[in-house]
Figure 1 (tube, protein in one colour):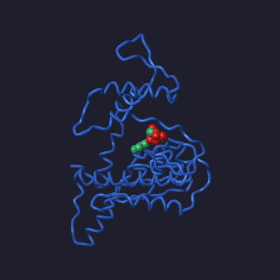
Figure 2 (cartoon, rainbow, N blue to C red):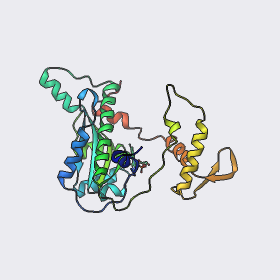
Figure 3 (spheres, protein in one colour):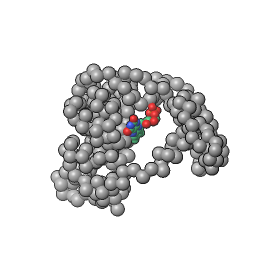
Length: 255
Ligand SMILES: Cc1cc2nc3c(=O)[nH]c(=O)nc-3n(C[C@H](O)[C@H](O)[C@H](O)COP(=O)(O)O)c2cc1C
């Protein structure tokens, strides 16, 4: 099945090389307007986005986000923030006390952020622009919060580079549909077959350029590096252990 919207979605790739051409403010405003059209829990709209175009700020943010070159090279960097600060003000104006100390309130904002950000990404791609999400915005939250002047009850969750692509990346195949789509109940039949099939698909793309790794449990044998090895390495790292403390400092105590 195809139509222009599906075609746009199917050809998504993250973009990590950008032309230096600046982005008119009106284009960023159009993209954020599209983001605002996304569904949002109870219409609370519990997110904000800081659009950073200043090169000095982009350089600093790049350093705070693992020195990723595309953060300083893209003409705009969007910082998507969970935002309960605005609702705190609403409560003050209406004579209520906002409940902020539970995981649920933070999750509402985090889900809102993700949905709005993805609307923005699609809107950008529909205009011929490229984006790349930046999770390393959470590497140094205190410094990012200070640099962007983020008030209590806001928290930077995702960064996003935005600009005119200088190099198109290859489309990365996704897991077989059967891995992620379950009918009626969760079904693990043939789970491993799908995983091995996906590893083979990813090797065939050349993304991992023939890297070899030891076969698990067989010290003398090697095999091609692929998605399972990549993913297992990634999720077996302890990362960003200071996040809870940083969240608490911003007023999200996650009880
Ligand atoms: C929440 C999130 C955080 C990400 N963080 C980074 C990042 O810090 N740097 C980067 O280059 N790509 C980052 N990415 C992009 C992913 O690596 C990319 O989406 C994934 O490899 C699939 O590739 P594709 O987007 O080209 O299809 C992130 C993506 C998401 C959704």
